[in-house]
Image 1: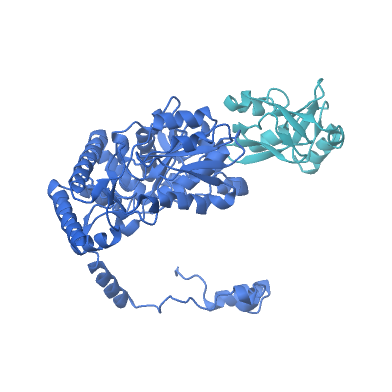
Image 2 (image 1 turned 135 degrees about the vertical axis):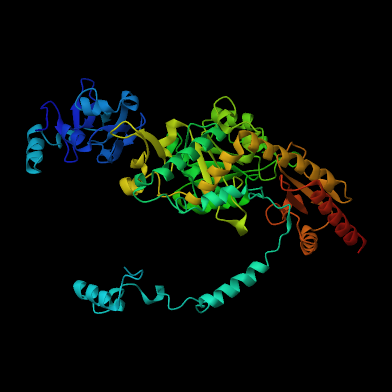
Amino acid sequence: MSQVPADRRYTRSHEWARPLADGTLEIGITDHAQHALGDLVYVETPETGRALAAGEACAVVESVKAASDVYAPVAGTVVAANTELAGSPELVNQDCYGAGWLLRIQPISTTDYAAMLSADDYAALLAAEGA
Amino acid sequence: MPFIPHTPEDVAEMLATIGAKSIDELFEEIPASLRVRGLPGIPEALSEMEIGRLMSDRARQDGRPLCFLGAGAYEHHIPSAVWALTTRGEFYSAYTPYQAEASQGTLQLIYEYQTMIASLTGMQVSNASLYDGGSAVAEAALMAARAHRRSKSMRVLVPRSVHPFYRKAAVATAGNQGMRFEELGYERETGKVDRAALAAFAGEDVTALVIQQPNFFGTLEDVDDLTDWAHAHGALVIAVVNPTSLALLKPPGEWGTQGADIVVGDGQPLGVPLSSGGPYFGFMTTRMEYVRSMPGRIVGRTVDAGGKEGFTLTLQAREQHIRRGKATSNICTNQGLLMTAATIYLSLMGPTGLARVASVSHQRTQELVSALTRIKGVRAAFSAPRFHEAVVQFDRPVAPVLRELEQQGVLGGLDLADHYPELGPALLVCATETKTSADIERYAALLGETLRRAQAA
């Protein structure tokens, strides 16, 4: 059973967003996503300052068997990217909800985040998908 | 199993399954105006006997001219072993094999090729080869736009002293993918990139600067200065090089303080015969940090489950069979046969052999230029040092002179009238290690006579 922490919200495409104290959102991929991808060998993160629309491809996670785009769950501006991943992509596999975060976004509004799935809804989605 | 898989019965069965009455009905939605009814200009099919006769008649027209024509493809001596080995059944394929890992010998050979090309260009990583020099320049421009994430302009500066065909191929391939190619002039005195024209781009967003060494005129550019200029102004450097010349010249990986970022070129000089213009192969190397932006196949060395050495295609997540529309590489093969020949050629020559070829080619070209410029009405166009090609200017149009030489069995060089009209009557000439002093004397004597006759007329 995949972990789905309750302190954040989720997308149907298996990203999570966690509100930070400074009003930004930290973005990553879920336990289910990292498990489905397998061992990551490369993570491409966006440039700081880039403006993102909700749903726009903003990062790439590449494993030994697949490469997938990561979509911005909310509209906003990239304020930070996890530079540790350049040398240690395995952090996403080891700690996808913590040290394996991908980027931080300063959201344009709170609406997009509020519209994301709650932990319960995301867990229900995974259950429905048979995960 | 027959080579033609669709018998009339097969076709009828497939049509019945999908519910179409005929092939015409299946393609009904294609407007009549877009349908091709015949192929004008394509003659009727010939029998094997007829085509054999036609081809042997054509082959007789080839002759064995004494060749002083270079311009991107060069006549070098190719040791017999190169093609004797390359055409063995085990190697004889044009492409990267399917189920590549079943062909360990081929993968090992590609790995050796990559190692040699990376070493020759002074770079960290090479792909398994591209189609030719021109397409490699186009791919390098597209790669620069992917790799250089801070630059948004997709703008590449290309000196006019870069091979005109490479420039055309780059525009044709990448021009419709958002790339903008802007020309830089050359200095009329030296034949090198015009630094004033380059300086005008300072402060603008430029994705990459292309530097060809030696350039199309055979002239050596100030590659260190140009590379440092590009990096100081936030642009990547795409080096276009002749592989033979690298046995003598500084490898692009050592240009300036940081080295070039992407290196490409045509590999033809490494064991590939001229063959009426192809097929040749392109090569491409880069820094490890840009490897994921590089197109083409890459072979890596690894160990199997038992710890034994093995070879495998690697970094395939860049490729279109995995990344689909977002692939950074749409080249799912390599120029396998020609690259095999090059690897064997390089193995036979070794660093010393290649340096001798380069050095003798340079000496012969110097000899050629001094022999030709002793003729009244002929002068060297540019003052800067050269490798194994040079531009000479005439006091009258080049084309009729070349035709006369050709009748005497000499290919005198490339008339630059179409590509560089501003140079007046100008001819690009080349001599490699295949030309003896007697060959050069013969060319100079014939050219002298031809020009004297024309001057007297």
